[in-house]
Length: 383
Image 1 (cartoon, rainbow, N blue to C red):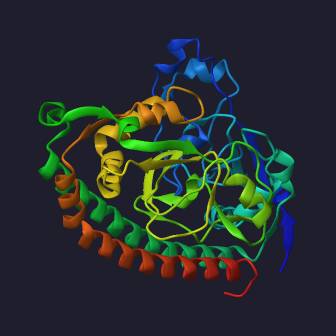
Image 2 (tube, rainbow, N blue to C red):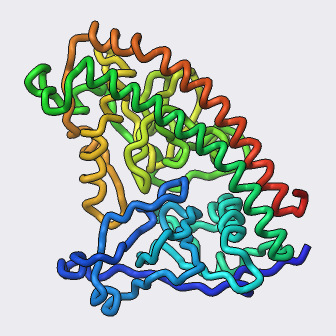
């Protein structure tokens, strides 16, 4: 199959940030997005809107028709085909394919190269890849009709996984309904229960490694924010560290059964509980919350997943250009302390939902495995 460097078959454009000191720049109607505004499913939620004048007076650009955005700083490798024109920050690179390259095929190809981007990322605190790294990436170039056929197959396979993810999200909605029925609406918490903070309910709040761990092809799973899903942990797309590196990392944080993991950088607020004994390591984008013995893990996880705390997390994280939620901010999140027997009753009532979520997660993992297999075969010319 014919191969070509991406730089030979596409045009590139970098973004920028209008002067944040000029408040008038951020009072317009043009969506301005950063890497943090794109989720792992390729959906976008713009937190800021700017004016035409802001575009003219900064390095930001507006996407062209038939182009996609690739995150090249922070959460490297995420892609977005904008549903409408947007302006974008220096976290992203706009890519416009030439006539012999289909846009959806290109998007699917870039999504399949997450390991390539991870290997070429550089930076102590903010990871990124250079334009040259992206341009040097070699892409298979079958005829356009074949590209469209491959993209359509991958779209259908991904749609199955998305439906199962949506079913899991529906279960989370049911969990929140039970939570509010038992403990009241957010406005009632302070009047019904003793007020507290998340820090008051936790024995420990910390996060993962602040340096770059030494990765290898197998070993102990190294989790980042992308592996923390709502209600479950994705072990299908992890990095790994060796035993020696793991022994060093766990001196900072040693996750154990019953701990709650919270995505706290890039993607904010996803909550999952460690339900079985397992050896794992964490990077900075994952926070760990270890509940007090008197606090039920299921109750605290549901509290963290509630609309009130999710809104507060995003409010605090969005106060800077790069969405980050730090340990002290997590500790100060508002909470309340119901009686232990009521916490236990809530955990019991939601246990069936947990069982259903596990079954759905297993089905989702099967769908994801099928998608990964198809994706790998597609770009080897085997579909």
